[in-house]
Image (cartoon, rainbow, N blue to C red; front, top):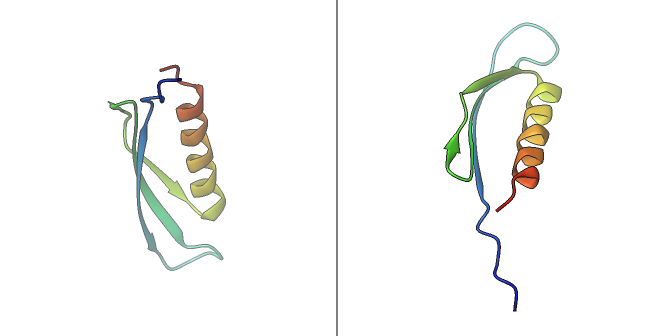
Length: 65
């Protein structure tokens, strides 16, 4: 029987809308992988927020247990 992976990640998005531009979405991103906190980040616009989430998921998948 295989031991389940103990790898884990946490991502917290705080999003809000600002006036101006077609996509006024702004986000503050707090994330960790395997308990290692990464510096907070910010993103502007839907594409940038989604890109940040994809990068974080890639970091979770790349880490070895």
